[in-house]
Image 1 (cartoon, rainbow, N blue to C red):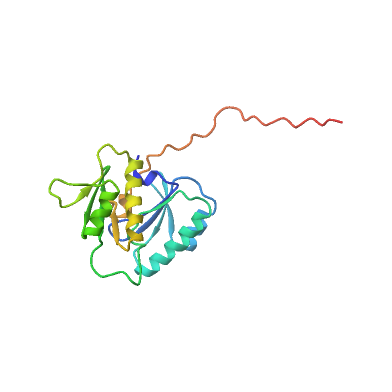
Image 2 (cartoon, one colour):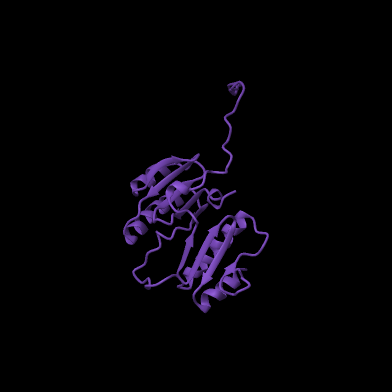
Length: 200
C-alpha cells in the first residue's frame, strides 16, 4: 500500500509545486470545500484527486488551510505532508532543517542542525553508515513509515525547526494509482425489510 492510500485525506506536493489532496473515502461536502478553496477536481488512475497549481506561498498556505479546516469537521484521519502549504512570515531564508525523501517504501532524512539530528534520533531514525543522513529502522510497514515521518515533522515544527517532505512525485501525472480496493457493489436480489407489525 502506498503512503498516499493510508489516511482518509492525504495532502502532498509534487516536485513541480502542485499541491494535491487525495480522498481515500467519500467525505460529505469535500468536493465543494476543496473547489471553494481553489482546488481543481479530477479522476486520476482510479482515485479522486484535487489539485492546486503552483502559486504564491502565502496564498497556497491560506487556501489549503481553509480546505483542511473544512475537512477536519468530517474526519481527523488527515495527513498533510505538503511542502507547498508551509508558509510563515517568520520563515528563515535557506534550506529546511530537516529534509525527508520518501521513495519506494523507504525514508531518508538529512538534518542540517544538531537539534534536528537529536530530534530524528528521538523518533527512532538511525544514522546511515557515512553519517550524512538518517533513515527509518528496518522492518517498518507503510503505515509505520507514515507515522514516523508525520511524528518527526510535527515535533520539528513545535521546536521551530523547518521540515520539507519530498514524496518523489515529479508532476501530478506521476501521482501513483490507488492501491486500495474499491468496494464491489452488492450483487443478488435486493431485500427490503418488512414493515413492522402494529399491535393493539
